[in-house]
Image (cartoon, rainbow, N blue to C red; front, side):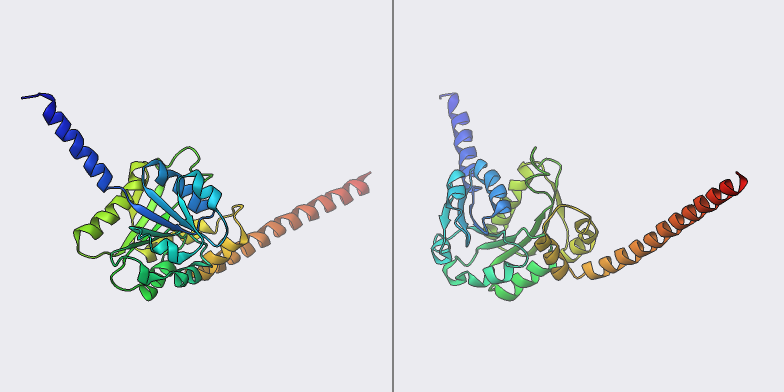
Length: 262
């Protein structure tokens, strides 16, 4: 018996498992963040489809993704995963524009928005019950992850998964993309995420007004946080002006005394 046969069998079995773990992922919203994720997805060997209102066909081609302007053509490719990577403000409109009837019944819908209760409720409202739902937040971006994803937090909530092997495997394979890159995997309910993330997300950064607008509109914890920040800032401002006033008065009187003494 050839001694190499067991190793050949193991190698073929390993290759088969590797191929079975690969996903066909449709990235809906192929802007900067969608392209950022696509580069890692492509490097891991997943099949990529891309859709956006703007023409990002060149960016898609650079990572080996097929680009579709028409969402009907995209959905007819029957992706395993539909990844919503739009802005918070456009998520509702974009999701409503997808011809859901053209997708397979077991399709997994995933979002990567910075808020979680909003996409969770949107998915539950608009998606038929035969679609699976996974809400996620990669808490990093092109700048913070320029040296890799290792150690960076990836928050997720398995909102709705069918009790079937293919659904569970599909979800596990998607999460494995981030686990393979060394992300710190954090399973957390959407509501808890929004409550804990509000304070971080409203810290001063060079992010655009549209992002802050989306965070403010679609995280119910943001109003309370901003009110607390406003009160705290007002208190600090009063204390600073009070100290400045005391110092100016002291300097003024010291100057007057010096003039009188001379």
